[in-house]
Length: 507
Image 1 (cartoon, rainbow, N blue to C red):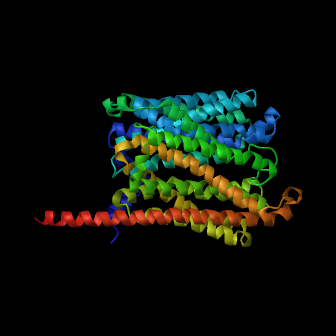
Image 2: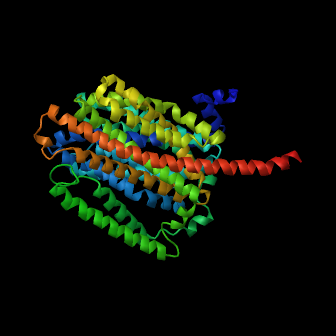
Image 3: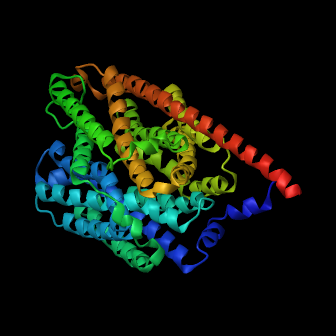
């Protein structure tokens, strides 16, 4: 028998009203939605505008790519630091300051007269995004209890998907017919709205730092060491060297091997310092919490697969099948549209019963989408590709909100740590996902690929996509196995509690 209340709660407006039962909750959700929209809109212009900015500044695309690299570098390396800073000074203060920085930096980026200015402002955009994402999770977890967080997380996730669709639909027009500067300016009104929605959060006493905040030790040397190690790791996966974008060419080896070695050295020193410290900057003891670590691992594999979708699918469509870049956008847009409502459904069912199959099923759906593309993409018309990708996008949009909620629920005693390490893991997952995908793709490409015609090169790109898809499928399957095991543990624990409570209720 299907529960009527379940259908009633599947209505987006009804669920939002339930979550926003008072002004505090409503303001928090609106603030998180607009800031997530701001982060998404501030991300898309950097990636989409690189060719136009390279042409405007009369530089190579490889030089203009530093605009994107600067943001990725700053965001990935500092997000844990700002989570710790938020626990000391107050999450809302750092969060609100991040909105101000992002809005101002987006406006200033639009005024850049050379690539150096654009890179600097892009770095500030990354700082603002880092301050927002690292502190929005503890804010949400403070306002909403563990039975509401699945649905609550779905609201900013849906807002991000709206930002993605908006960017895909509008920014291409701006770049084609107007100016890249207008693309950056789009973030300014959104940022001002986010500031307006976020300002009341500064007045809520329960969101202000308590007496325990004074005991939070930031540890500047450890913080700088962690930032340096993460920066080296991110740079080790980027092709900022001469020659072809490869991990095996002579130029690539001269760059990537020393960067990998630098990362390992810095990471080793950082871990040693933390283990010897009585008040570590990063408390490794939190990873002994099995539920937290398992949820984090599954989430990490998920974000590796996300970057594989947005990087490998365009390569397949453009280089492997010979279609124009706009066709790659058409292939991705239908799946992105599912993100407007599926996260709310997944969040609702997580809050209601946390079914053990929900997260592993989402991850396996992503894997099945890659299986379909790898096996059949060359045998079907292009309009079938979005249909074949639907399982991957369904899995993406059903996994995200429950994963966020479970990670934050698994470490209630240190929400700043949970948020900081979750966002750091995601950024590292993006880097690893791109690196693995590029490496596997490169194994199928001959050294003479640049000398071939488009038609001659297409079979090699299709084979490379199959190699890369295989890596994604195995990685995401590992995450699904861990999620399934964790779901089983949660289910058995729930049944044990019910058995204990049943006699008591009968009495």
